[in-house]
Amino acid sequence: MGTLIQVRQRPSAATFLGKGKLEELKHLIEEKEADLVIFDQELTPVQLRNIEKELETKVIDRTMLILDIFAQRARSREGILQVELARLEYSLPRLTGKGKEMGRITGGIGTRGGAGEQKLELDRRRIRRRIRDLKEQMNDVKKNREMQRKQRTRSGIPVISLVGYTNAGKSSLFNALCQRASRSGQAQVEADDRLFQTLDTTTRRIHLEEVGDALITDTVGFIRNLPHHLVRAFRSTLEEAVGADILLNVVDLSDPDYLEKLEVVDELLLELGADRERMVTVFNKVDKCPGLQGSEGVYVSARQGQGLPELLQLITDRLQ
Image (cartoon, rainbow, N blue to C red):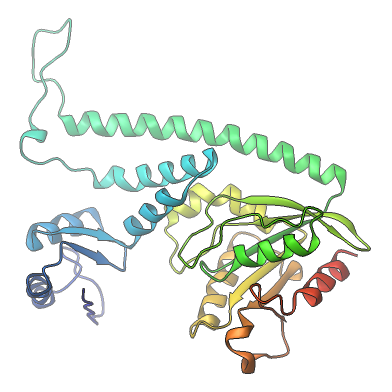
């Protein structure tokens, strides 16, 4: 509906935006008849409350939006657990009650009435308990994954992980490589032109001449300022991805900001402990911009099949 930008040295502690800019935003909401405001930054609980009170409109921040998209995309048990944990950890300090909800609840059975607890306190206690349960379940999932990883290590099967910025075409490349190198020749995952299409990690077996069987993994996409709650919840999954024998860092060459996004992914990978020696930059969607090819990296088109034989040969050489 509209976009508003403010340049200032530091955000207002109370309302993030300055008073004048907040008033301008209020007029913009009325003019556009908008019913939602999204801030492309993380807001503190105080800022969120004050802005909603001032604008009288639903307000969410960047983290809330990303968590909401993740919640819609999660399909596997692990993905659902990870997203729920991130959402609860994020929402706990932002939990507020209004009006009657903040009234005292009377004591339960076996008490003499009394003031009881605030509903807000009960909600917080319930959320903390759920967070504990989720962390225990996540530990079980982590142990199971570590066991599978040890079995793979013992079997000597190499692992190739596809990583990169969200919507760079990782799933399309995953499908294309599986079609060329798997015995079944079937496409493996849903690929679509939208953020975080792939949230749950998918692993398939492929066969490479001169090497034999290998495992290829499609992982969740990265994004600038990925919320730390999500990084923490997905850390074990991401660490497993970066521990692969070969990391294919997929870049959308047709994106005007591809260099900046490549830098974002590089920083996140190094933060997670990735080994630069194992990383291969794969520039995807080369069919959309044929004049942009350079010397570094591999240039492919997952949709057109261009450059895939060269990529498979490079993977084979690296593994050998």
